[in-house]
Image (cartoon, rainbow, N blue to C red):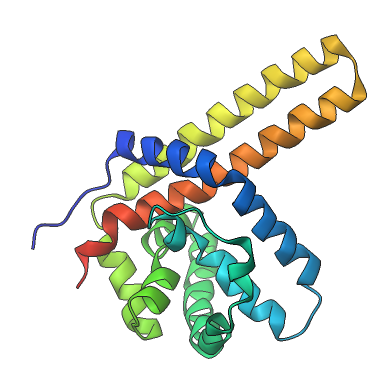
Length: 203
């Protein structure tokens, strides 16, 4: 099977189309997660649901914010924590060796939770699957992150200047809130595009 490489243009195309369409749902889901984060046990399931939200976005449907309370997510609590533990220690070790190894590992394993639950793999298989699926695409993933970060910063600065010229607090609040919602949605949609494009690289 030929390995598909991540397409830079397709990633941003997906990110904007998926992110804009799902912006209200994504923010509602995040708001519900924040409101219930203090409830023991329930918060584990909702956290896993938020982490896996890109896999739902990748299916092309508008997500249901209440879906984060689905009990199926709590069923994977043990596997989720094991996978997290297996990734955190090496990534932390990578930080001690000059930051770059940690970045490479983070990109390589960024799809691990998706393979764990969506594809039913065990923690070690999920991490390996993510590494295999992202092979040859990590530079593109890094480039997408850098471009998106720079573009968001530039647009945020422009909006800040415009709002300061208007000098109306309520308008500034509305504009910056809308921008935050859009940026958050597009950021999550970028991960959805990664999954959409690369998930079939591993059986």
